[in-house]
Image 1 (cartoon, rainbow, N blue to C red):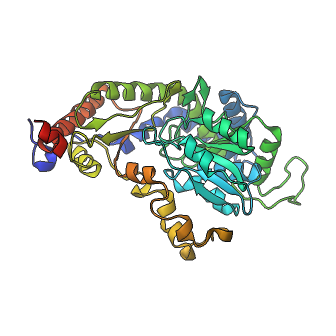
Image 2: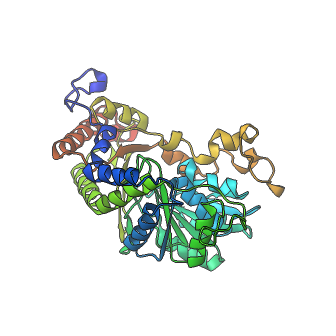
Image 3: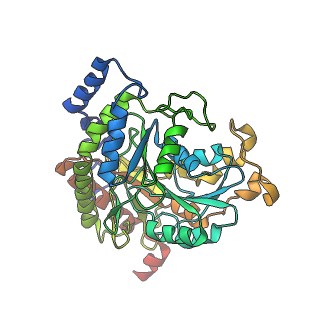
Length: 424
C-alpha cells in the first residue's frame, strides 16, 4: 500500500486541485459585455437604472414566483425577508446551529432571539422533530437553512409551521436549484433567500435576491432594502425604519448573465458529485452523504464523514492527509463550532450589536450553553468538507477519487478501531 503524502510519500495528484482558481473560469465575454453596457450607460445605481429591475423580473420567472427583490448580499436578503414577514422585538426565530452567521444577523438586528434546533445526523439539516419541540408562543418564524446544496426537509418544516401558525423563510444561499418533489428550494416558504457572493453557485461579487409569491411581502421587502423610500410616489417620508441594501446595476447585470448559466452549472456539479460518490461507495473508513428520497441535491459541498466503526482516525487527520495528497478538503464547517458558541453569543458584552432582552431566560450563557445541540456539536467534529466546482476536469475528478480512496484505505488498514482490530 502506497505511503501517504502526509507521512513522506508521493502525493497522489501531481498538482493540488484549487477550486478558488477554477472559479475564475466562470466569467467570460458575456459578463464583460454586461459590465461595459452598464458603464457606458453612465448609470450604476439601481434607483436610476433598469438592470436590477430586469434581473428581479428574470429571477422571478426562473423560479416561477410572482416577485423577486435583489439585495446587496445574501445576509441582506435574509434580513429583508425577516423584516417583511414581521419579525420583531421579543419574537423568536428557529434556526440551524450549523450555518453561516449571515443567516442569524437579521434575527438579532430585528430584536428577535435565535432559537437553535438540533440537526439530523445524516442530512446535517435541522431535525423537524427538534424544530417542532422548539416552538413556543413567541415563535414568529422558522428559518429553514438548506445546507451545502441539499433540501432542508422543507415540506415537513412547512407542515409544522402551518400547524403552529408560524412563517417559514428559506435560506437557500448554498442550494441554488436544489429540488424537493420536483420543486425548487426557496419556493416553499413565504420567502426564499439566495446569495451570489464569491463562493456560491453563481457569482456577482456580493449580492442576494429573495423570491416570493406574496405581493405585500414583495412591497415590504422593496421598502426595507431601500430605506423605505417610496420610489414610485416620489415620497421621502419613510413609513418604517429600514436599511440600505440596494444592489448595484453592475452586480445586477452580471447576475443576469450568471442566471443564464445556472442550469448548466448545477447539471455539471451533479455529474461530478454523482461520479465521485459512486466511485467511493464501499471505500472502507468513509461514510457518504445520504440524499433524502425525492430530493435533488445541487452540491455546493460534498460532506463526507469518517466511519468510526472502521477507523480510529478522526476527521481532522483525514482532511489533513487528503490535503497533502492534493485534495481540497477541510473540517470544521464555519469555524468548527455551532453558531451559538461563537464569541458574540458567549460574550455579548463585546458585541457591536446587543442581543435582545432575555426575559426569564437568564444569562446568554444559560440560554446558549455547550451541549445545547449535541448532535450538531458531535457531527461538526466528524465532517470532512469537499468543495465541488463545475470546472473540475474529468482528470481532476479521477484524481480526487483516487486520492480519497488511497487515504481512507490506508487508515482503515493501518489505524482500525479497536472493535475492528479484535475482529481480525
